[in-house]
Length: 451
Image (cartoon, rainbow, N blue to C red):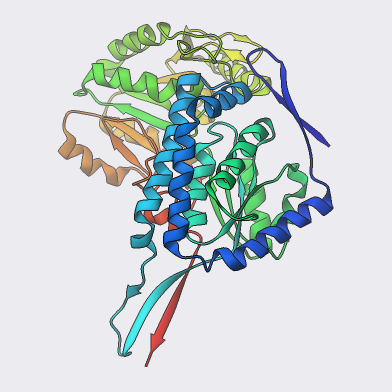
């Protein structure tokens, strides 16, 4: 089997990749197991030094690595560069904080000494998506490898070029053979990999369907899994909000990465007293966004990563309009490109409200009260994060109890930050990445009791 990397902007083939044979795959698994035996015993200072070096390599090659992201999945080049810089940041963060996170935790008991130590689990199998092809991998790899585990990456088939570069970064930084490997395989070998004795845990960032499948296989084989899945984040604007700030943030929160983000704001829940003004100003700002070739620095909205993704978004737009939504801006598709689109008068029974929309589509929802805003916000099968805009930040903190999602961002868009745990609830998955939580996910918290 061969996989082709296709530029979504012009349809040109970038590269072709041959799938590993069963023998080659088994060798990769064997290499990972062998590497773990030595890697786990390397000093933490050595592992953090290599991670620091990986961050330096990323910063030294921002332009080249960003170009590969843009060519393979269509992200505007300025955002691709920011993604590489963020990966370097997460490398620095864990290089600087791993010693504190992994330190023994002394617990006072009747023993002469009792403590919890933190040991690595083994090989972690990572199934990663195309929308942030470097960041999703590094936010898993930086803490996981530094803790002493080895990593096996199955990336999305349209970004195998990015996957190879990531492996090269770790190799150039001095990581031993087998500690981090990218594998070119189809999804049909997933169970073989998960069931293999080498693999001790699985992390997946992707769709609800992919997460459900992997979680079932992991459960069948009694292996730990972490899932970061879809989202339909609400962006609540109360009547006392700073509208200029809310609009500026809303445009970024929806249109970043051409709308292809699990934590993008997708349902804009606006108090009726400011609804018309907010929607009008939002449309005005979105209309100013420059669309076109994502390789150009001036481009702010590029194509979606694949035509089937644009097709699905177009279907959701058309269905919502048929259900009564008002098309206020955009609404058209051209191959992989979908116009930035705004729908007004969206209600809870429409596709744009009920489904995750993965692209530049903003659904505007009018509410009469704070209570109704949070009621509609909670009416979702997903639970990644909520943005809330209000000048009364003291009261806003009290509203946190009304949010069942993994995060509440007040007067800011929902975003991932190496210093804060990241993850969701409901069908957005389980487990946490980043911060200390992310390092603890693939650790054996081992009790040592001395009498």
